[in-house]
Structures are given as structure tokens and as C-alpha cells.
Amino acid sequence: VRVFDHHTEEFARDWREIYTDLRRDCPVAHSDRHGGFYVLTRYADVKAALHDPRTFSCARAFDQLPGVKGGVTVPRNPFRLGMMEMDPPEATGYRRVLAPLFSAKAVREYLPRMTEIVAWSVDRVIESGRIDFVDDLANPVPALITLDYLGLPLENWADYARVLHRAVYREAGSARDLELLLADLTAAIKARRAAGPGGGDFVDTLLNADINGEPLSDEMVVEMVFTVLNGGIDTSTALIAHMFLHLEEHPDDRAALIADPSRIPGAVDEMVRHVTPGPGLARTVLKPVEIAGTRLEPGDRVLLAFGSANTDDEMFPDANRVDIGRENAAKHLSFGSGIHRCLGASLAPAEMTVLLEQVLARMPDYRIDVDAVRAYPKIPLVNGFIAVPATFTPGEPQLSGFASELPVSRSS
Ligand code: HEM
Image 1: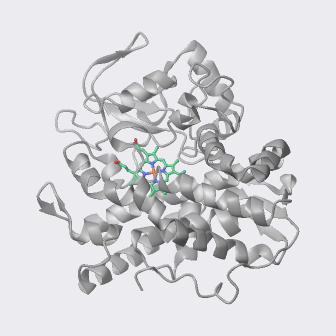
Image 2: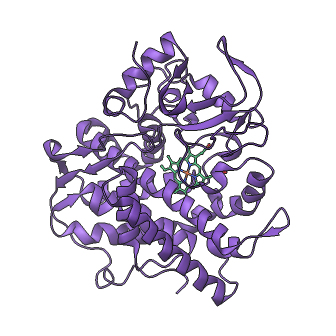
Image 3: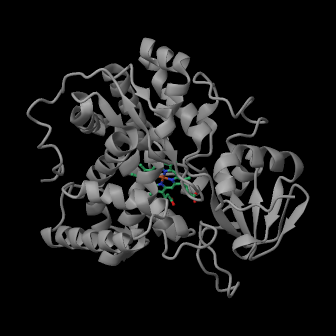
């Protein structure tokens, strides 16, 4: 019997197989690692837990359960992850204020700017005929778009992208870099506070928000912004790298999307499902509950294995295969579900769609050097890549004369 541990290289290599075995033999497994936790692997059980926040809490500590370390990661993250680690009514207070900024309509209105940022990123490599999908697209595009969308200055986008990416796969020195990033962010938020209200973007909204009757401190705004950067950027980076790799390994899918770009949004949903950029997040049990014959008690920690739910054949037949026309692909749990469902769940797929459209139109013949591809050695929080180099037939830039100017913020 294997001991389940999502922090191992074995998990990074064999997670599909490990989850297939668990779903079949032991859908509510227990692991003694990281202080002990359960792992829910079936789609129906993961989804039910996400929709029962009174039983499955996101909070980090509990008056009624002294000593229990909660939060949405196993083991608990060193610092709180903003609203992701709050329960109602706090969590719902934030949602009420922030959800309109991330609506499908708001994302649609942002599309021209998003397209410009993607075009700029492609322009930077198009004449060379060489690209590393991680360093040149997967990393810059989500960093630029997320910073821009939130209303933060873009000058330091490359530092942000690099630091967040390295922190996720825990390269040496990454913790110190994160502190520098946090200091930079704090300075940017203080500057926005001093400049006064305006713009209506994410930062502005938070600086002027009443959450359940309370204004937010600068520290709280920094925590919220950092959570979004941390949660939104490297997950998108991972997904982008996987998408281009998939289309390298499946030329039939690449040809189908080039022939009919209207299929791209559906293909994106399917790849979000199949990849599951964030393989799972945790909850803490507050009330006794029985799942598939196993009784969980208050204080028990539970990992909700999104990657397993998304590859449950009961829900998605032949689930470990990519089917770019799969009808129910969008029912994946890669963005969670229920009251904490990802706020970027419209923004991220739109970004992936624009990116695929541009790459498939402008470098349709790219060939990845598969021997030089390097994946994260461990994937406890994000299943991503370090290097995905490729070559293609060079092309012309689209934004001529504009390329060196783009990274300034919308608000400036
Ligand atoms: C492919 C990319 C992404 C993936 C896979 C992803 C995944 C997730 C997941 C699974 C959750 C739910 C957490 C839970 O239930 O405990 C979440 C929450 C969240 N995501 Fe994303 N995310 C992505 C991109 C983004 C982007 C681009 C943004 C914003 C710019 C964003 C902002 C947030 C926020 C603010 C929350 C917290 C929501 C809450 O607690 O109410 N995410 N994300």
C-alpha cells in the first residue's frame, strides 16, 4: 500500500495512476504525512464538500478546535491566503465587492487590452523563430494581464513573474525574493492610497471598500492582491505550457484548431480539466460527516483532489484523454466550485483563448524540443513547467514601434 503524499516526485510523475487506484480502491484515503489528512478522490465527493462550507471550512484556526491548523493547503501555508482562507460571512463580504469586477461582462470589455498584451508578447519573439513557451509566453502573459487587470504598475512585471514562478517550485532563494515582492507591492498600494480614489479597478475597489461594514487596512489590501497574484499567475503559466505541449504531441488537435478557431474555447475548457493546474486544495472538518462509509470528525483535515475529480471516468468518460470536443468539459473542478469558486474563472480561459488564437495564427508550425522540456519536479500546489523551448518559421511583428512601450499600466 502506497502512502499518499502530494509533495513527492512520485506524485508529480504518477498522479493520474495514483488517483485511478484510489478512486477504485479507497475513495476516501487517509495519509499520515503532514500531520495526517484525508484525501477525497471522487468527483461527486469533492464537489459535495466544496458545496458544504459549514462542514468543510477554509479558515486557518478555530476557537472550538484549539491546536488544529486549518487553511486550504496541506500543510498549512506560512501566511494567510486572503479570502481563500476565510469562511462566511467574511468570505461572502469580499465576494460581494469583488465578483462584479471579474464577471464575464467585465472580462469581455477587457478583451481588446488583453489581445494587445498577448500580441506584444508574441511580437517580442516572432522575428527570431525561437521561443521558450514558459519564459516568453506562459510566464509574461498572465503576469502582465493580472497586474494590469488589478490596476498595478507594470514596470516590474518581469520580476513579479519570475519570483512567483520560482516560489511555486521552491527554487533556492525564492522565499527571500517573495519578501522583496511583498515590499514592492506594499509601496505600490500605499502610493495608490495616497493618490486617492479613482479608476474602479481591483486595487481601487479594495482601498475604498466596506467589507461587512469595515474599511480595509493597507495590509489587508496587500494580502488580497498578493493572494490573487500568487493564485492566478503561476496556475495560468502552468496551463499555457501544458496546452502548447499537448498540441505538439497531438498534431491532429492542432490542425483542428487551426482549421476552425471557433473550437478554441471548448478546447481550453477541456485542457483546464485535463491538466488541473492546481491539483488540489484543503478544508478542515467542523461537523461529523460520513463519506463513502468513512466517518470524518471535527478537526480532520481533508485534501480535495481536483486532479482526481477531473479524471473520474464516472463523470468524464476516458477522462485521462484530451477530447477537445468533450461536451461536459466545463464541469471540471479546476476552478473549484461553490462559494470560493475562482474569481478568475472567466478571465483565465479568455486569456488562454486569445493566446492560442495568436500562436496558432502566427507560429502555427512551432516544434517543441521535447528532450529539453523540464517539468516541475514536485506539484503540490501547481502542476507546471520550467522550460518548453521551441522553434518556428519567423514572422512579422504586429505592433510595430509599440513593442518597447507597452508595459505601462492602464491607469497611467
Ligand atoms: C488557470 C488558472 C487558474 C486556476 C486553475 C485557478 C484555480 C482556483 C481555485 C481552484 C480556486 C478555489 C479555491 C478554493 O476553493 O479553496 C481559486 C480561487 C480564486 N482565484 Fe483562481 N485560478 C486561476 C486563475 C485565476 C486568476 C487569473 C485570478 C485573478 C486574476 C484568480 C483569482 C482567484 C481568487 C481571488 C480566488 C479566491 C476566491 C474565493 O476565495 O472566494 N484565479 N482559483
